[in-house]
Image (cartoon, rainbow, N blue to C red; front, side, top):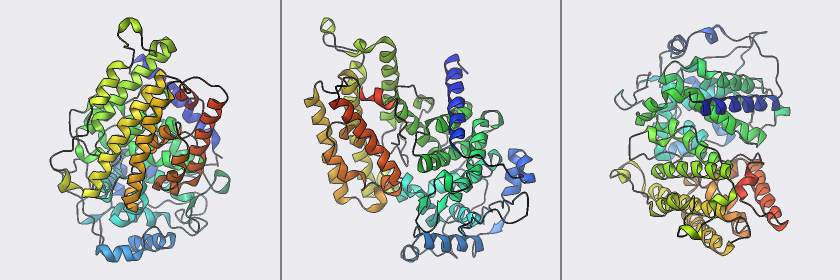
Length: 503
């Protein structure tokens, strides 16, 4: 590990410790004997072979899902899938390199028991059967879709996403299953909301964060690394939903822990649904907070990657990472380094990367329409246009502080709002999870009013109303600073404000 990364790792460990201190830490119960096994022993023990059809646990998950209104039974009827006949099959080993479960067998979720009384620890005080829900997530495509639909561009990604999650679930000492448990344990059945830390037992989430913090020493193979990555994503969402503060340190902890395995993971397309999203989130957080991303897109030699969150922006992501590095250099050298110089034909530190981004276009792979619906492709192309405009607008604001050259910034903001309004007019509900939070944010920092009617219509904001409040609060903070005479890049304000920055 390089000295720079060692410093980053120390900083991340410190911030994860801070995250832990925010939670009410209960006395941990006695763990089952399985927790002391090695990763591979645990996998063999956890992956018990049981028939998939007529699974009682899956049926229980459907009942809970129906009560939560996350999986309407009429959806099951319309798709020809019933609780007794889950359609999910795991692709063969040539498709999913890390798959450990045959296609005709179900993943059996290990039960957790309390250390003091032997009662089933998977039934919460509000009656939710957590193991039944996790069983449904692992084995039923509709249950999986309903729990993850806010984190995929469209339903065409669901099968690959579920296959990847199911394949790696037994590894890394079951940290992924434990992370799902921690998240579901704080889920309120009646109101479909995440409880506050004071309203429930957060000790399981705290335990998972500790395991994630120490994952670097326990990660022995790519399977462990993928499970740790997915656990980091589950815990990130869990933290944002509960605390509504930045969880960047949680994500970075998982990335640093598995960094030695990332090149191998990126060589396996079947793992894209797990490995690509953390790179996107870290890159966007790094851009806004003027830091350098941990995992570089250059580790992957594939040109065409279409992902559940990145969409068609993989090649743009590499340019955004270049911009992150450029922004860090400018910050270290001083603000004047970013201003165009009349002595050098108007060139500045951002000229070259800006030219690359202006030339960039999204190029879908030849088979895109055979893999995705026309609406999904349209949404991904729109996302690509929005991210290109938003990145150029950020470059403008890195050069010129708020209140300077505002007319040019308004052009970019109006272009973003025009695209967003068009999208809202035709996008069905299952496409409103399109990751376009960053473009919306940068546009609202130039013109606030048009975005106020859009925020609540995006799926992620609709599901987590506290995130909407923090999002709007940051926008208001920047506008108040601007009216109060602040003349600097708004990203310098973001570095001091612990709002979660999701793509």
